[in-house]
Image 1 (tube, helix red, strand yellow):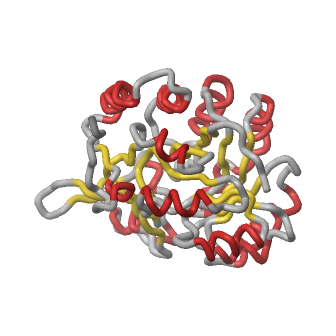
Image 2: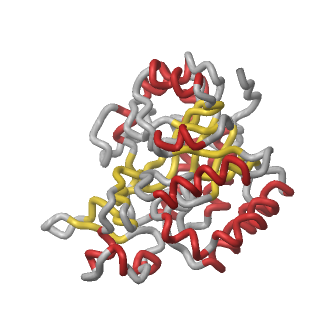
Length: 306
């Protein structure tokens, strides 16, 4: 069993298609300034994007390691082509020995050549039996799906034989993935000739109801929440329930400042309600949401209790 002795703040994989230079600058700042313990790299949403920045990944990973951060290479949420399967199999031998691989599609299990891995939040771990099968197959950390309630998280974390349980605590919630590219269709393009229009919306393309109220965000083949999922007031209870890793999702916000707020709350250096007020200023006018954790619809917001 892996023993975790501190609360780990992690930065999930970049879900959006950013220009290569912006991506390099972003991770340089994360390496040099952010109080992040673990950084996920790699392409989760659309493997076509990887060609734009893959050559930069070794240097990005090396810089993060020099800064004392653990590196995890994330794999696609939906394996649809042989080249994607071959790429994952190549990770098993090419990824540095000190790094981990995150799987987001169960099809990747057969491609890891016996390497230990992180079970990503897009794997449907909704009960103890599924969790234990993954740990038996080599998962040293289980990142839970975003739809779980606080009680369900506590149950899965308390008995996790790997000793490492990760939850999503900040960012637009990844809700679904598809073989169709909604971003391309929105611009009257086909997926095979998408012209990478998703790069125009670096935090996702808003999708609204008929009355004009935005409820979702589109990111290539991925659907996310419009609101930002935010857990701050709940961090202490989740830590006491056995959660060891707390994941932030990258956005065009000042992610160093976001990470500093979360680190301060985890270290009990700032009141969660004060941190929430500061974070709300940075996110406005996009709403905050946390409904799933409280057993409510995902787009709901449960204010901190007195």
